[in-house]
Image 1 (cartoon, rainbow over the protein chains, first blue to last red):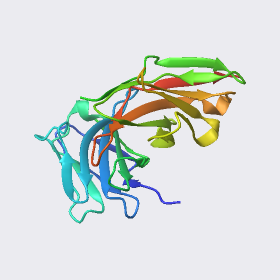
Image 2: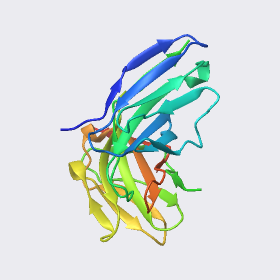
Image 3: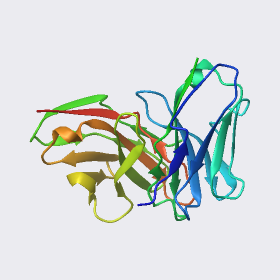
Image 4: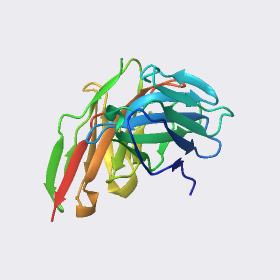
Length: 115
Length: 114
């Protein structure tokens, strides 16, 4: 069964350091999402790609966060510099089709701890 | 702006009893509605969705959900709960149309007591 791959699973970093997360969506899925989930809360969308284009990054803290999906396949989310408040689970998801009626499939997530 | 409300942070139910996890939504236009389940330190797993048609949709693991347009609700149900159903459940909404944001509720922790 096809899956969304994310790495690393866990990351501990010191504040002010740079950190990057990688996501490989299900093959053929044009839409890719990055979500942040604080423990005990629902996922919050950071950025949404349609192929290689950003279609929504309204909630992405652009002073420190960046995301790219250069070839419209895999994606990288970067934080520089990391802050204590960035500690959370970072989830990547993908969906196929272009009508919005298909479900998103999630990866296992990257648990980030900033110390 | 679209939103999802899950009014109960915690739902407890005895094994074998029916369960309901509540969800209401707000969105412009026709909604696409989804339920996901999350186990500790894992990603979200898709359970079921409402796109159009029959208001009662059936999904994985015996779960079903009823879409009620007048009440803007999409409650998750199961006739007989299992201990293994204990997990965190999320409702999500997307406005119909392409490239629209998928917005999640805050989640409901379901605990099924043996």
